Length: 387
Image 1 (cartoon, rainbow, N blue to C red):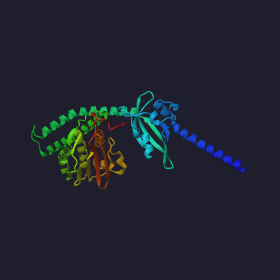
Image 2 (cartoon, rainbow, N blue to C red):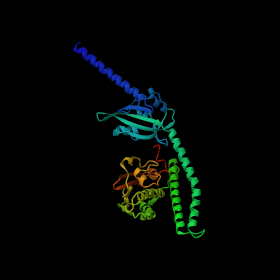
Image 3 (cartoon, rainbow, N blue to C red):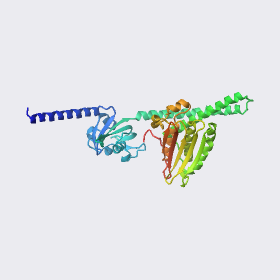
Image 4 (cartoon, helix red, strand yellow):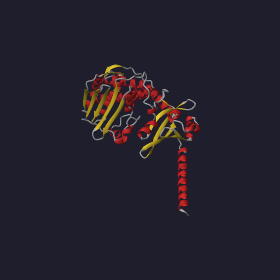
């Protein structure tokens, strides 16, 4: 066999292996159970599996070679087109990192469908050369969430009436309207009152969560002094801090105005929730500090504690509904895991942001910002299952 013949045979074998590898990859892509679309570095669609075609209502021929953002229209819950730079596939390509997000796509028939989207960039020689987007229909999941929220709302409303009667008559007993009581009986009644108060707080939290998720909480923006709101919160929570010998500090920093146009009740609830959490999860004799930073374009509020901190493995779930870190559950059995979920939803509705840093050895610092210039909505929208 000549060298030329041998070289041709080797070349043929390489091409055959390459063809076989491409066929294997293509078969794997098409067999993905969820919808899947692949693009090249220019955003042109290079592959569409059968599930994606069924979900979106397009045939493979209608999509292949077209520009992804133009062919697959992404919209918000309010049916507004999503900016190209905010789409998951764009973010994944630009950052070189996987992106997961819930989003709406418009089918070929015009119907809007909610999807859970995961996008991974295709990296070659440290450079993104395309992306693969995998998505699934979450219509049923949304409907189940809606039904759960409706049930929680109905149950909470129904619980409030008998709870009010329990509190009223317990207070009457404690005050001696139905005869004198000894110290042991009064102590027992105070336990009942305390439990009723905690139940009332839980009901209020559940109702607020369901209102946010249904978009039925009204926002009433007006000019207010945020330092005055914070002072009210500190006064209301000072007793709880004193019971644990926690030093409660309040400071205002910066020369900008403390006046901001936003909803006073919602801002007060946000601050109260974060500060009360800090007091609750700080051991006796610790310190909680509330600092308001007055800036030109926004106001940043910091709440720092010397509490138990949040484990690193739990930090990405801290704003999830019903989540409580394991180190907290072991020390504090009372809690719903709804407070921070509620705070995040309220802040997003006011155009704000929230973040934190935490260490199990030194405590936690929660911070949130409120913009000075923000067109506030008439109704709060859900922190989203869908964004």
